Length: 207
Length: 96
Ligand SMILES: [Zn+2]
Image (cartoon, rainbow over all chains, first blue to last red; front, side, top):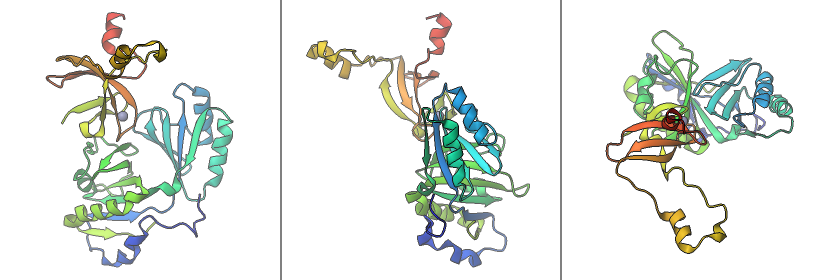
């Protein structure tokens, strides 16, 4: 994982922090870049319950078994990506986590890949956040179907994304994180801005 | 647009998937023992029925897993999907 002082945002060319002052007074949508979380892709054979258990313990909880759900413990979020695949999202600088997981795997058949620098992460929230996503995504994002803590991989405006729903910041608002391949980040941010224009937009300082 | 039930993710839009042709075709264990006609049959010839058809699809934009689909080629009705390496729900019922 890159030293933070060397890391460059995948959205650097957009200079989004310089536009925070342009925010509308009563924005229906807020956009923010989440900078440099540590991202680990984990694959373990479906039937290998022993490694699953060991890795789950190292993560302070269990690996989510149910499709398209997440688990969270100690600031680390684990997203279900497939029956034998997960994405581990940890705060920047969680270098020891990879070593702990490696120790839990203990040389057995599994794959742990650092993909921290391969993704752009965009956080979208507000009263109209869901409507913005619905303009470019076929998933049913209604609160009854896509619950807080759920995740799903799908297409958003032709880009392959992992979508994750976070806790509502207010009763009439929703919050989402979008994980997209780094080279699609700029495009997707611009698409989101365009889609959010009619609801009044605020760009928030990067997290 | 079809709504395809991925065995893991549930019903998703067709554009998240890619088709992989007829299911259940077994690669010959010893290709050298086959004559050209038999090899060509394995490579190219497919049942192509009008009616129920077992085929492979991959949930390309979702969980990226291959799975089996039983689809009616005229009506597009999908009556079963099941993971690779497992027996279809129909065959389970009939005790195959
Ligand atoms: Zn799927």
